[in-house]
Image 1 (tube, helix red, strand yellow):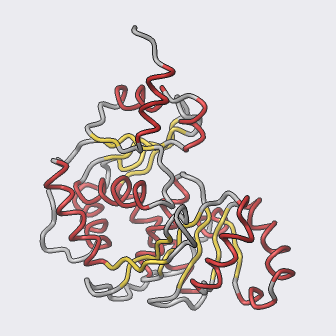
Image 2 (image 1 turned 90 degrees about the horizontal axis):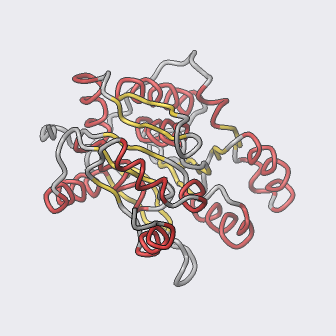
Length: 278
């Protein structure tokens, strides 16, 4: 069921938690195959409220930005939706720091975040590097995802999100030039999801097999947000899991009887090269 009365993806998430909180939303294949971690709609709502309350306790309000440098994981999902619940614009970027000076620093200057959320290892690295590279970054609080998620002593306050509000800030990949930031609003999300539901024949309860990085639009919008919109579940792994063994993607699709998946052409070529007639 699509909740036509809801104007934002936050409203959709909260309605799903209310009406079928026990339904599974994310099945994360932690090793790409058999090590499974799960997150229900109800657990997503609880985690998002907890992350949002942490952001609010730190003084972040609607329209502020939070840089999110996390791999595909349950932590990414919790932090991203926590930002949505707080009205804080998540700015998802790659957690790979190979292009630290060419990509991360310019994007950080453009987005002007108040907080940067990453893994413990990356957070420790950035605390040392950012201050030395540019003193203006000393005002950005850097914290690990696990520190935030472990915090449970704050109360969530509904910021009054509506359709005209911005939802998150998405940077282009930079493959054809310098990465450009685009503000995606809740009305944009809802219109996009409804048209995708129609053309993609999305049906409630269907699964989506996904390895695309969640900091890119394809994985984030079609995969993560789209599945929530139509009330399905995501079988998630990391891009590395796929690259090392492409057939994991197809096996997961078959094992969990997924109705949808998304990938660029090279992914199908890789599967063909690795497959046998059997």
